[in-house]
Length: 185
Image 1 (cartoon, helix red, strand yellow):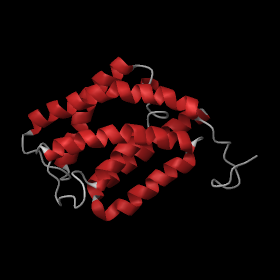
Image 2: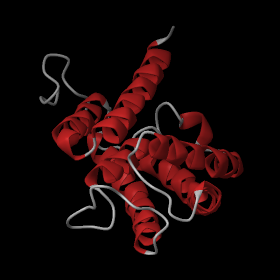
Image 3: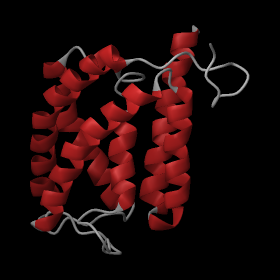
Image 4: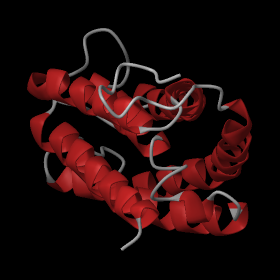
């Protein structure tokens, strides 16, 4: 396996660990979730462009999920204290964005395919979260799945466009092999 292949697998496994930690652990594991995000930023070649990409993807995603929570499509227990959605869901959005230039890179130049796959796949992940007790669907799984699928179908082209743009923002010098926080010259 090539180094690129290993990095893609690492990114895939990293996101699965983040998702499962968020869903199964919830608020008590917020520190672990934040640590996983930091690990990702230390691992990428250009953390600045990755942060911009992650925020640019997470903000509309969190806004959409907040709206769905506000109108009663999602119910979280315990109810988030300061926002419509819990912090663990924000970390999932940030983490998903962290896959777009890595393990999901192959989708970034295919917005139509991304829209179809996101429209089907995203509701399945939300259903998985519900089955694990992280969220309830007062409107039922079908209505919630259709709404989540519609949101992701609409967001997918934006995610692809932003991912393509993120490659032009890479300005960080390479990370030193001696220490990940030291920039090499």
